[in-house]
Image 1: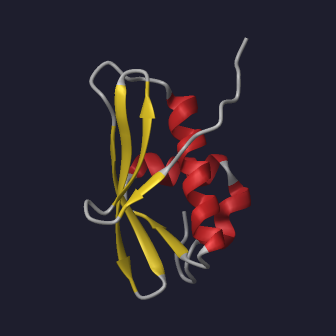
Image 2 (image 1 turned 120 degrees about the horizontal axis):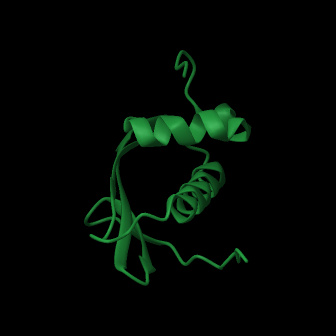
Length: 100
């Protein structure tokens, strides 16, 4: 049975990444800012980690942060582009002119 857990996300501005701790270690998404846009550039996972559902939940939480901060999201990594395609509810976060 799959359970939804509360995910605690830290915005590590020094390392320019969002972080959360999972059983296997640290899960993070690297970012960079330009004007009112956040570019999601890389997902770092612990070595044995393969839980795509948890990564998707982590990305959803990051989208909530972007909405709260009124940021547009630019997905650089193909895995994040796939996330946007699977979750069309977040397409309004894409800047004008970006098509997936």
